[in-house]
Structures are given as structure tokens and as C-alpha cells.
Length: 451
Image (cartoon, rainbow, N blue to C red; front, side, top):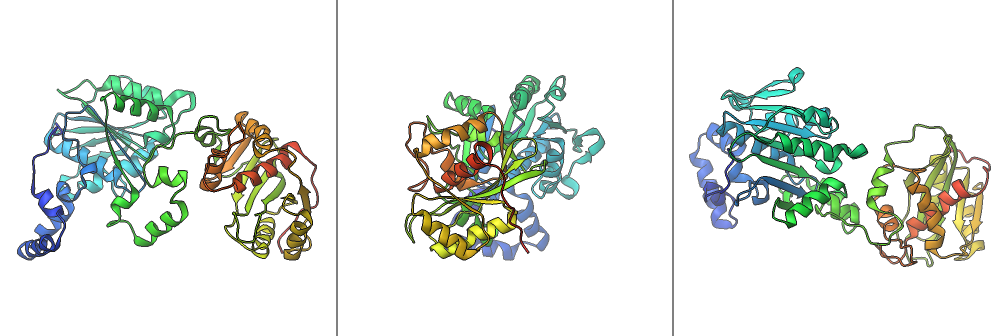
């Protein structure tokens, strides 16, 4: 069985900071043979793991590691499974992921998976056709897909590792059904235990576990991507922080925070998750680039959003090409570039900040741009409401993740306030203009093509 309490060990000594500790570690390295040093670095997980990656000290039945990407959640899950199997030959372990491919490619055979955590003689035998891992002492683990909840009817388990539960399929409540069916299988051993590892997202199963945590039924460990800075490539970490720090997406994906919706917002994060797809499969009938120009030369961002009308009558948001603190010449070139790159047939630009100037600047960047000026006679929320209704009816998709744009959308309030990032929802405003043109507006004009 996994331990419910950890006694002080050499791990704490190995991890302690300071010059003296560094010198003592160097002395230990000199005293060990090469194979002993390799074993210490590879296999002594408790010596190198952070506290949030190790089982709770208190008694527990469900342990949730809720942390940012790259934190080391997969390694923690794989090491826990290895420890359980090594110490309990009667262990019967469920490995559950969003799909069987993810269970195999990430949880079992991945760089931080079960096989990597226990190489050589310590590794279990993996039989992919049987969806089964077998250890020499008799411990067994089976692979399950959360997308097939019925596969969890019948088996019995003593332990389970559930990975990325926030991305399990919520269609027809499959994620909740998989979790419930798994709970009913946890009837072997004295203290059946379930470890769930995930980057948080707004999903019914996440809400349920967080509620159970408040009631003391679930032990939660939290962590950030930056907690693993000693392992992650420095360029990767710097790039992620530069792109996403401070946004709701960054709080979720890097800080491991469950970002809640603002009450009264026109869009919710759960709604946006439901409308996401990699790229549209239908033919594009029209493509527009919408622009929300900044008020001043070095003011707010210039919102630039590309969207298309599809042959099935729905729309897709293709890109957020918005640009921060740019001169008129620079943001006009960005608009012209987006129009060429996506083959747009129309550029829609808000004219409230000086329509003649906006049109002139855009034509200076590309004299062939077919520009339509639109005037805001209503407030932002009033203009956004019919577009939000299109999302509610499933008529708009997002071809990817647009972190800052989506943060702004979730900050637009039905009452007219704005409670998102920045002073103005410039990107969200551009999106509203684009979808209004495609779904609630005019017919197609000439198409702009790159040479």
C-alpha cells in the first residue's frame, strides 16, 4: 500500500539549499561509484521530488494534483504507481486517461510515464493488446479510456491514477460517468486510493472535486509551471511567461489556477471550450478581417481578428492578429498582412476614432484593401449580445486557443461593464465586428489574395 505518512529521509537532506549543502552533495558524488550515482539520480524519487509531487502526509483516499503545465504531474503519477506496485504485489491499479492513446503514449510509454519511471529490471511487462502492465511481484495495472465509461463496469481495483481529468470528454456526461464507475471499482485492499493529476479547467468533474476538497474528502496539491524551472528549458519557460503571464489562460495553464467565470458575463470559459476545434472542415465562403483601432498612437492594443463564414452556415474564428502599442502605420501593415495571409474579401474597421484617418492609413498599407467602415451606435455589450447568442446556439467555432481574446470575451458583461484584462476589450470588439459582418451583415465583396 502507498504510505499515508512520510518520515524524514535523506531526500530532505539532498534537497536542502545553501552553499554548505552544495558542498556536501559534491562530496557525496565523489564518494559514490558511477553506477551508484546514476541510481541515486534516476531512482531515488523521494530525494529529488518536490513536496507537492509526493503523497500527502495525512490519511487520504483521493489526492488531486492541480498544477500548471510542465510542473511534473505525469512524473508524480508514474512514480506513485511504481511505488505502489513495488510495495504491494496484490495491487490492482487502474490507469485512466482521456483516451487509450493518451494512456499509452503519456501515462505508460511517455518520457515521464510508468515505464520511464521504472527502467531495466524494475520495469513491468507491458502487453498493449491486453491493455495491461504486470510487475514481477504480481502487481497489475490496466489501461482505461474515460471516453468509454462502460469499460469501468466489472473490474476491481485497489489504486487508480487518473490523468488530465479536466480534459476528459464531457459530452453526454461521459467524464462524470467514468469517474463514478471508477469509484465503484475501488473496493480492493484496506485503503483504496485514487490519484488525479490535471491542469485545471472549468468542467463539472473539476467542480465536484473542488467541492469535495472543501469538505475534506479530497487532498489537493497545487503548483506552477515555474516550480519546475530547474528542469524545463529556460527559453521555453521565458517564452511561455512572456506570452501568457497575467492572462486568464496563463493563470490556468501556468499557475494551475481554476479560473472561474465572472457572474453576468456574456461568454463563459466552459462555452468557449465547447466551441473549440483544430481547424474547420467545411469550405470557407467568406473571410473578413475586423479592426478595432486604438484611440491614440501609443494607446491600447489594436484589435485585429480574422473570421470566416463556412458553407454549413456557421462561422469560425481563425486568428487573433492584434498588435500592442503600435503606430498607425504598423497596425495598418498588420491588418494588410492578415488580409493577404487569410485571403480576406473584406476589412471591417470601426470608424468612431476617425473614419477618414482609419481608411487612409489602411489604404496607405495596401491600396487594394476593400475597407468597410462601421460605426458604433450601441454600447459594446449591446453589440456583443447577438454575437454571444450565436455562440450559445453552437454556430461559432474557434480554430485554436486565443488566450487574451477569450479573456476579454469573458470580461464583457451583459450589464455593459467590462471586467476583463486591460482598459478596453479591443480584441473582443474586433471579434464582434467580424462575426456581425459575417453572420448578421452584408454579402461578399472582392477577395484579397497574396501574390
